Length: 115
Image 1 (cartoon, helix red, strand yellow):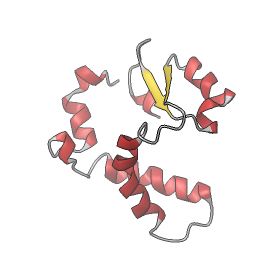
Image 2 (spheres, helix red, strand yellow):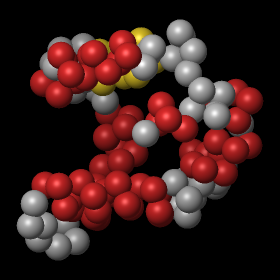
Image 3 (cartoon, rainbow, N blue to C red):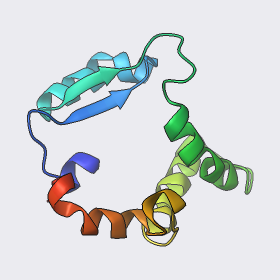
Image 4 (cartoon, one colour):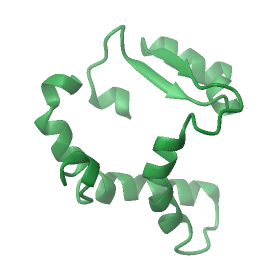
């Protein structure tokens, strides 16, 4: 989804950990198909994804723990909806000068190369 809403260049990087889903043939093939450069974290480094975990962790816990989900797909849809409808467009972030992520990207579009 990020690729479809942003202009990418040969310098565009996607970062992931060494989880099976990110080292699979399907994922790495898609990285190549979309012309991205893959950055994989250090094996066994608990600090590698600390920033994104602390950023999304509270939101994930709030959504995941709000009820008993029937399936993983249902939970995944709820998380995507939360990110798309609240986190990106309504939640203000102190690390972004109290802007929403959408406002921040619009303000910095030339730097972020948004489509």
